[in-house]
Image 1 (cartoon, rainbow, N blue to C red):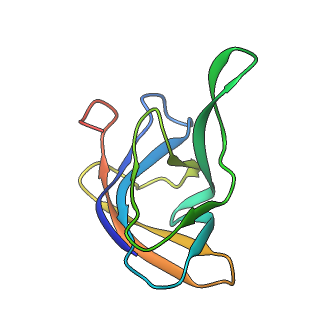
Image 2 (image 1 turned 90 degrees about the vertical axis):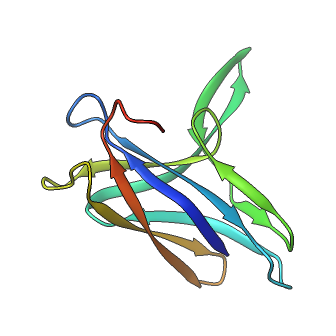
Length: 122
């Protein structure tokens, strides 16, 4: 997996969850399934996506995300992303945090995400 353009956007209201966005490309020969995410300095993190439910688009926990050779995925606002809950004090715009993706079987990929203020470009 190659991760680029990774950023954690702080919430506009302290105590609310932050969102992590990034671009993922995969050139491995073996198919993988991303099953969870962790964010350093967060109490918990969850893969999220938007889907239609009861006639409305709603944010919900994502099912495991399968990837195969040649896939390019954008984790971006309004689509797939990582929600980070309970951020530790001291995580501030201009810094960075480590994000770890875990695939089925237990292998992990860790990458740094730039921390951005709530009003900055997502």
